[in-house]
Length: 129
Image (cartoon, rainbow, N blue to C red; front, side, top):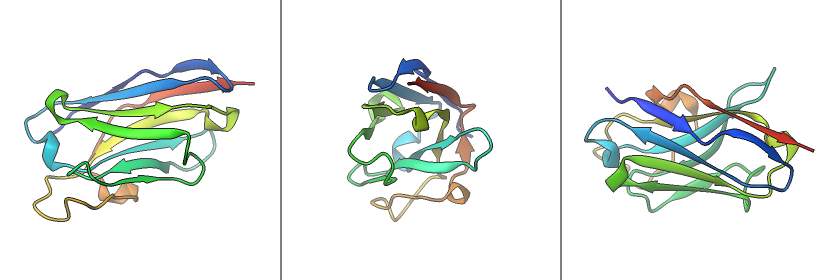
């Protein structure tokens, strides 16, 4: 079992920045691919960014490319999402997710929520104009 706990959400003005963190329990963090998803009111949950278990590959949704950066620190069992140049349309609840332990495909970035096995409780981000 893996438990994920997000933090770092809040209220920010458009153009501002936030860094989300997601701390994981357990000793197998480095063997899992990770992702950040978001769900705005009345909308489906969408992928924001993903990072492979090797840490060598990343994926970004077109809407955040160039503004958001995903990274992981395996020594701290933590994945981050640095969000810059925030826009009102970035307002959502942000969730981190982890896959099962991966013995292969360690350079692959998983983009579908169905490919993730563990989810955090979410942290709310509100961007005001």
